Amino acid sequence: MTTHICLLTNRHWLFDGRVINHACALGAAGFQITIADCGRPPEWYRARAGTGDPAGYLPPTCMVRRIEDSTQALPMPMQQLIRRQFRWWLHRNRVRQLAAISADVYQAADLLTARYSLRVAAQTGARVVYDIRDLYSAEWEGAHPSRVRRRAIAQEADAVRRADARLTVCNGLARLVAERYTLPLPQVIRSCRDPVPAEATGPDVRSAIGLDTKTPLLVHTGHSERGRALEEMVDIVRRLPGVHLALVGQQEGVDMVGRAIDPSVGARVHVVPALPAPEVPAFIRSADAAVIYLRPVSVNMRYALPNKFFEAIAAGLPLAISDGEEFRPLIRQYQLGVVFDPADRTAAVAAVGAVLRDRGRYREAVRSAAAQLCWHRESAAYVQLYRDLLRAR
Image (tube, rainbow, N blue to C red):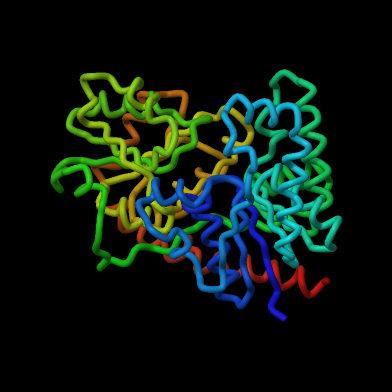
């Protein structure tokens, strides 16, 4: 009988390259896959991505199942009331739907889905894999220890320890998990992407915004708001005349982008709608460089190694990137670009200028690195994790 694996997501799976990578790797290995979406309905994906069938990016053995929220048909005030007063009922309803999937393994992507997975496992005997992309306790260190936060931190400790297997996105976060919870190091599975072929054709960011090939173009992908230095990136454009910036994938916060743009540079900052994750590297390939500017607002941010980093490498783009525990060694090892201090805007401007001036040399280095930092290599370790887990069972 084919092993059935359920990938739980609460993070817009079509725009999350990690979820799609996992589904494709497990599907190619012969597993039956269900993506259990606790986020948005299918109509939302079709409207945002401009695609008729979001599941077309997945292998034939993979299906998407919407975990329904029965309150969505109600007026918003009533939804909010129910979510405040009857949250236990909503959670129980979701757990019931997840248990009905009858998977052998449930993989969680955050604290909420980890709690759901453990409840289902207690009922069905399924295994639980916790994909630890960040730690709730690391995100709010130093913040006011409210009752809600203390409870969530305790729930996180319980979920991390009870999971049958743990994986994470980088070495720093793996060490943090092992030290904080006195556990073996989780398996590190980076969110790599396969490189874009040199002969790739199709839509690209430069054509989408109507920019000629001689105009310097920076690109930034992703839509997260916490830690994203939007004002600093706009300031880079302000201080480098003639340079343009494309913000690709602004699913949220578009109004904030508009407020942050100074009228004098507004024509050089372009907001580009979100794309399905598999299309992003090929779309941004025509830019000159990628800029990743993250404020170190938490331990999670200091250990960040996000999708946008590997999207740029797959696209063959040199990087101007804020310093971080995980960025620094990779940039130095593969000569991918220039690292700058996120607290120093002048250093950021200098780093972008240096990358643009020497982008030919950096592009060659990125192309060489892409053969190593690719999902084709990373996926083998990910599939092996599941084979070891099932063999132990």
